[in-house]
Image (cartoon, helix red, strand yellow):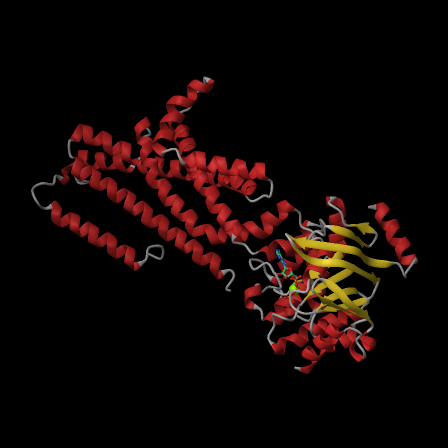
Length: 260
Length: 253
Ligand SMILES: Nc1ncnc2c1ncn2[C@@H]1O[C@H](COP(=O)(O)OP(=O)(O)OP(=O)(O)O)[C@@H](O)[C@H]1O
Ligand SMILES: [Mg+2]
């Protein structure tokens, strides 16, 4: 515990040191190679937006960062901790990384506020009173304090996704991963979730978002990443990425997605 | 009346009516359980007294078998092949033994193994619980497997450990889904508890048997026995349905 605190301080001192580093990461599902030599580096406070065609490996890549998938080759270092089979390292990394899923994955048998309190109470050993205060604080931040006692099934998709974001924030992570957080939502609910994400970005959170919401990307991203067939084809700042993408594959993808 | 649906009540009425009508014919001798006479009343009370043991036996057995079933189901869900093998072996082995054989083995066989004394009640409980635990294990396994992978992933992403994930996320949802199956098992258990009569347990069936030996009125006495099980199980079924409705009302969607 104390050791880790020191490491964190050193990291802060050298602000340029990346908080997430993937180098030479490869992954196979059986014979099929999903990730091919992935190299990314994310600085503290950086916002990275990942896009690419379906099946290109975007989800798999970000799921490797909190070890929902295991990589078979290469190194992933999160906030100074390398992801190995060591359960302590995995625990340490998951403690720093929050994740928001396309399908929300709220716990349907718990109310919104209970969804938020579960992690702090069980994993952080917080008292129920403190956890409730924290949960109320984050529900406020995603603008739905009045929905605290409703079950997920009683909330709209946009509200559910905001509860899911608040649930992650309750663990006070340093990094947030978003895996297509708005693709399961009706169009009229997309903006309420993107607004919350934009506010989170403005607050200085380190974020990696897999999304095809290019308006959001232009507004928020520091770095754009384009993936295709398990590879990172292009990495650039948004100006270059949208203005003059280098690869043909990326050009075509952008035409398709912006054309519509 | 809230507990018993109108349909259930109707079935009961028809049965009673049918008995009453046939009961008037010469072949029946309802006097053995006629509550207006002294012997009839004491016979009836003797029969009904078995209810306590049938319920106690079944409920104790099912509680134990639920715990054992869960403990057997969990290793079956792991990725470790030895744990899986343990699960499969247990389920296949136990499932292959007829309940009556299990009762005989536990009551007459087991004591010789370790020179221990097992009373009739606990022999019955152990035999019924063991037999049922294989089915409970399969029910739990199916129930837990039906929970979407995203629930585990969400739990992991907020740093819950395995025990907490199971206890607070997976099992509450799984149990809700398997409640009808658990209800079925309880009904099944209530019926199978009648087999424990062979080792002398004074439950419903044993008492009916004993009374038939002294009174020679098997038709009436066994008819009462049928009604006893019928009412008991209709009540249990209604209770399970009520519980299901209540748990669903919690959630909506
Ligand atoms: N558990 C798995 N087993 C086998 N193959 C898998 C598994 N998960 C994903 N894949 C395959 O890996 C590839 C990459 O999947 P991934 O979900 O990472 O793509 P994606 O870029 O997120 O696509 P989408 O935009 O559709 O979400 C796909 O071809 C998919 O079929
Ligand atoms: Mg995906």
